[in-house]
Length: 131
Image (tube, rainbow, N blue to C red):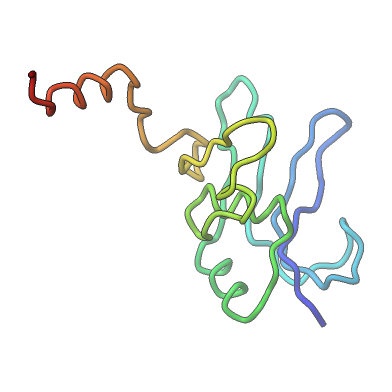
């Protein structure tokens, strides 16, 4: 039995809500599961609710015993800081560079502030000696 960590869809039409679940790979998407590990809300709404919530201890346990995350869950776990970047993220992609900044799993906001390109150029110019 191969255990997969994957998303099960809940919510209504045009308002998806997902639960992160550990399930047998042969069971249907919304079918029988072994354990609920958290949730993911792609549309947090106007009340600025939480985007995702994960039980990190249980996710780490399932990964340690050999559970395989699906591709969307792998991206979620990477953004939460539990997994290294997937191979395609590290290589870049055809449409341009991909955003690989870590995101707070509770709020969905970027943890690091982006550096200003002009600031980097200015810092580089200060270090050089003028001829």
